[in-house]
Length: 202
Image (cartoon, rainbow, N blue to C red; front, side, top):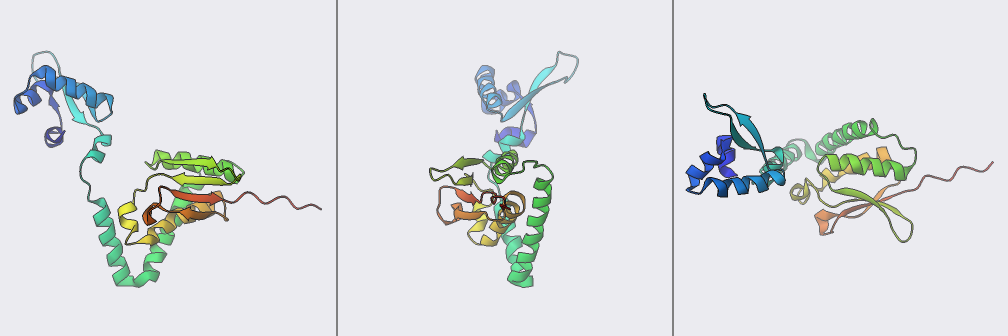
């Protein structure tokens, strides 16, 4: 996979020659990687002969390589806080939360908090967050995030969590509260969703 990343694309014959393996052995590995969604094949004409199948990495394969995004984000947030203070950082994250709320609000149509939580969880999953909605034994509705894209950053900058807090407050229910956090050792980020208030009786 590292060689495919370096070459951009290569055939089974190319890779077999690179590593001193048989073409069939390499092709078996490529078939498995393609099944798992990490490589894709395409037909390429390299000359007058029949087209050659070349393989290249998919976007999903990026997750298998070391990423430095969390370090860059942490450095940016640190610089913002040093230059503009905590109030400046809070203001920037507040704006990001508002923009995220606007984006999600435009796609959510449910009228009740539970329905809105279900729709938000589906949208979060589209963005790589493993989120679901469960009803506890006590009847409480919880939105749960089982992974956090910013988990390595939140330890130093817990203010980042304010973005999802703003989204939940603005989009799902203004009574939503967090009861567990991955950043503090929890197995998930759990948010209790307040039910819609009972209609007033005249």
